[in-house]
Image 1 (cartoon, protein in one colour):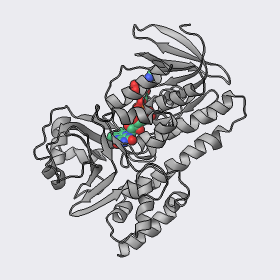
Image 2 (cartoon, rainbow, N blue to C red; image 1 turned 90 degrees about the vertical axis):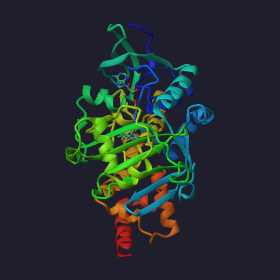
Image 3 (cartoon, rainbow, N blue to C red; image 1 turned 30 degrees about the vertical axis):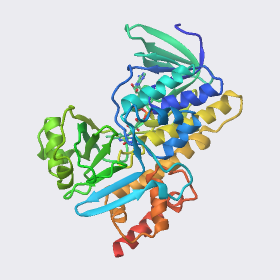
Image 4 (cartoon, rainbow, N blue to C red; image 1 turned 180 degrees about the horizontal axis):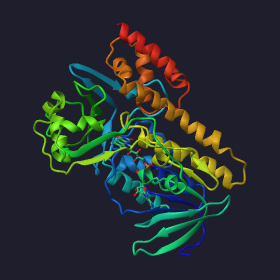
Length: 414
Ligand code: FAD
């Protein structure tokens, strides 16, 4: 045995892991994070949503992020802009329907994740860097974990509870056979960072830019500006779309960008100085989000789709909900993980799901580019795009599918 028993082991030091660790450590629990990599490390998921700021605030981490924003070139963000051919639409998150922050940041995840991890470490959370969780024996009150250290040596660790925040590592879903196929088709994303050299005024750097391919409405690009003249640029499409382009990722990404006139123009002076990365089949699901001795956070649970930048927000929401249920459980209360965690989390995820499905079949795109929505509806849609997918006072959250379909009809008639 390497260490004394701790209260909670968190697998992974991404945003869901560090937010959960901060919340539980603040309640007085002994928390240990097992992280298989050393930070800073690259991660995708750079455009945050304003709803995230509430979870960072709750975990006492918002100030750390705000005060480091300049040094790490975190870019102020107040909305999302959409382009399809010669159609444009801007959503300003400050004019949203829901209460709560209306602005956030676009961040390079290497320094962002490192910042959060260093802060929770400073507060007393132990992080085993370079250690990988490879096995578990779960029970009601005692969890035994099999970990490999950097020298390749196995050791065991015991805890009262395990939070799996391993992201696409999906440690417990794999070990416990919880993985289920996503309802979304397999898509691929290619992306890189560039020195963008975009002329001032051509592009609102305070917003993420989503460009829809002028020939394929289910193919879209992100342009996520940082505060140092660089951008993250990426494309998402079903695998077959990429067949007509070069096999090699760097060339393929350049060719795809050049096939879309808006982006070709915006990035005409860009310096491509970073190798492109490719990720495929990222949408995933699980049969259950909790069980005896464990709960799944963030991407270790369900991951929908990158289109509305909801990943980090859902990850932090899951950390907030699970930490609160776990605290009550560790205090000896009877808790209902299904209603207090799984159902509550899924309610917001399902709101995003409705909008993601309607994005790819074109219904939501028609809403976005319609000039026929009143200000109030625009504010309600802005709320969802800003991440407030759990705010049931918003009719587009409470009755997403029905409300959205009615709106689609109105917009299409105009
Ligand atoms: P992660 O951030 O992935 O962290 C998991 C950590 O666990 C990692 O550090 C990993 O090293 C560690 N780990 C894994 N296995 C083990 C193990 N066995 N033992 C120990 N440690 C382990 N989200 C947004 O909010 N905005 C966006 O703009 C956005 N864009 C995206 C674009 C694409 C193409 C994709 C695929 C996703 C995007 N996302 C975006 C989603 C976002 O990447 C994730 O939702 C988010 O990073 C999830 O955070 P997490 O804390 O669950 O996991």
